[in-house]
Amino acid sequence: MLPTHGRFGHSAITQRPDFDWPGGARLAVYVAVNCEHFAYDDGETDLGWTPGLDQPDSYNFGWRDYGLRVGAFRVAETLERVGIVPTVLVNSEVYEHAPSVPAAFRALGAEFVAHGRTNSVQPNAQTEDEERATVELVRRTVADAEGAAPRGWMSPGANPSRATEDLLAEAGYAYTLDWPIDDQPVWMTTRGGPLLSVPYPHELNDLPVFVHHHQTAETFASMIIDSFEELREDSRRQPLVLSISLHTFLAGQPYRLRRVREALEHLRAHADGVWFTTPGAIADHYATVVPPPR
Image 1 (spheres, rainbow, N blue to C red):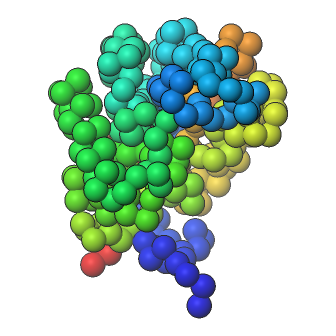
Image 2 (cartoon, rainbow, N blue to C red):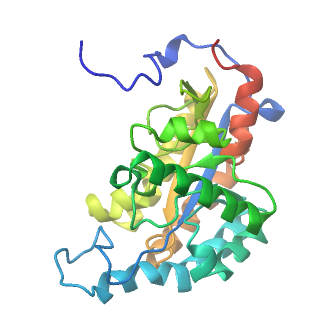
């Protein structure tokens, strides 16, 4: 047999129990906003339009930092305007570097998801002890700032190590966004007990759309609307989750933000049977209707 991660088995989405989301909704929708900080002159900022520049790479560092200086606030204003509570995937270093960014989303009642210390360091570059220390440090930092420990995690670069899920469960996290595997939550097995994988998008994500696939803002807006309408139809048969991922330095660019806002306004105008929520609320409800396997 091929090597396996051992976290979960195969499950056909057509062969699962039926249930409703709160209020009888059939489609749960959340919008994730990635707020990330990078080291300057210490490793690559990754995803640069001009890879291979000598350090210090102020061009790509600045492109990223634009998201914390400008883009984050424009995205926050847009979500407030359309009436969607944000889910904020936050590097803990953002609290030190740009504390006004989490403050802007906190004012909107955002859910904060731990997103590592910095996107300059990914779990696969750490030993297990180093990663454990990071997981615990980030949890404490977010708890101190927000008054409650984060219940969810997403690894920098969406790149967990072989031990990440074990460390998360042992540290008290309830769910992860690292696995883009399904349109419903999936229970995972860890040495610390069950951990829920809540859907998070690779496709409906502005980073691969703009940086890897070189698509336009208009294409991304169409992707959001078409995904929403298709899943809204499908959700008549079974409950589903639609997640949308934005990065402050990408969706926060003015010409892109206009198209993103139009797409989100479409979603809000066709909200019958739709629950606009956060991944933490999705995890809580799912655990009541589909308990973890014994």
